[in-house]
Image (cartoon, rainbow, N blue to C red):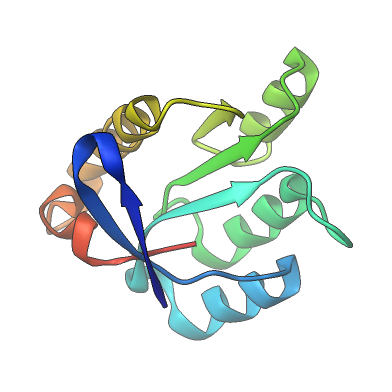
Amino acid sequence: MSAINIAPENITLTAVRAWSAEEALDIIQNEGNDFYDIIFMDHMMPEMDGVETTRRIRSIVGKDTPIIMLSAKGETFDKVLGLELGADDYIVKPFDPKELVARIKAVLRRYEPKQEESPSKDFWQKTSI
């Protein structure tokens, strides 16, 4: 695990980083749905792209964990494909950290009614990929 600081918001996230799609899938499968508040997925990865990885993650965690896809691919086709195959949001790189924080908060607000405990209460202390 490592810490990621989002400087403009003075927020530190605890993160589990996976260096490949297969590693991410193994981690998610082993930890289960309740371990993560949110998953960040890069669209362009070697061996298995983020779209396929997102599809596979959805088959493991269902719709209980939000996924935000990050990508340098900004074409409408790529955004729509990512969203249709399971991402809850799609952010084109480069992006402003303030936008990332706002989108995280927005995605978590949509998930709050479905959870017993509000993810926004402990989000900043838990783990993401």
